Image (cartoon, rainbow, N blue to C red; front, side, top):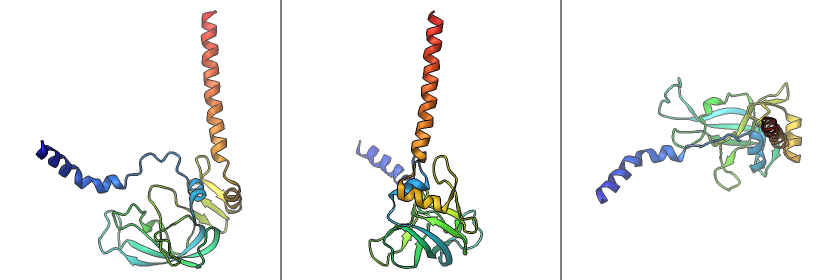
Length: 196
């Protein structure tokens, strides 16, 4: 019996790292939800990629960036006092997005996580949530999964929603509830007509 348990454990052990990084169902994942629950929410500009992974990443040509320096253009929420911070990417096992998704000179609405609770900490993103949105600075809009029903948002509207809570979930929930109530009402009415 002991041998069977050890054999099962050893056969599962190599997959534990994969399971540790699995996200599960993220049907309600959105930047609005991430921003509400984050300590830091900022508009950033990518200044440079500073470190690169030594190993090649399958499907990516060239060296994969591992860290980037960003300038904080505007702070919407948080206590970060520096105007430049470092954000770390994935090395293949850390459940972070690869930094190849970012471009030097581009702007992003971001809610990075502090790696350590110190004043000069580096930051990271988490692959299992929407931590950033691309920004067209001249149009003053952010693009990506802002909420369940919104994929484009004006930066001024975002700032107001962050201060006053986002009502998109309430609106979406109300619409779904109304559809369900309509469906149930019709079903009940159809049953009553059949009985008569």
